[in-house]
Image (cartoon, rainbow, N blue to C red; front, side, top):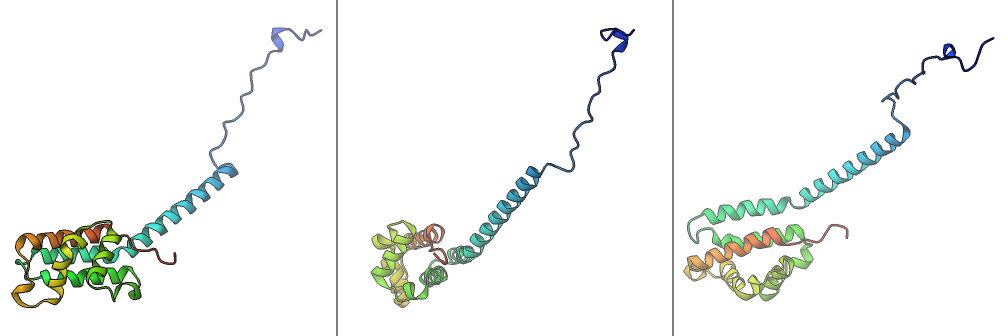
Length: 163
């Protein structure tokens, strides 16, 4: 008779095969799909932001070119550059007709500054509308105009399209 408790009846332990890495469980497919969608949305938003702000980079490069010029030689282009940049970001109806104090207020409000109303605005007006040597500010004021324009180009917040 055979004894069930006998050591001769022992067999080796059967170890199951390791779990395969492929194909993954269905949850991994869901996670990969969600990650892909999130990556596409992120890439789309980054591309849209870059497209919306392309004018800003072009204007900053043009301002740098103006600033490298001889004192006063190209400074008369700054008011036009600011207006062109504003027209690129805002609807024409809300920006094109702005002049003088309204224009200065618009520049300050959209960039969160106070430099145009308080000091640089009248110099911009002289550069835009005066002729001859009377339009050219002294070198210290020229630097202030360039700094204010650079600050506005970097800091202004344009409205989003469609909302």
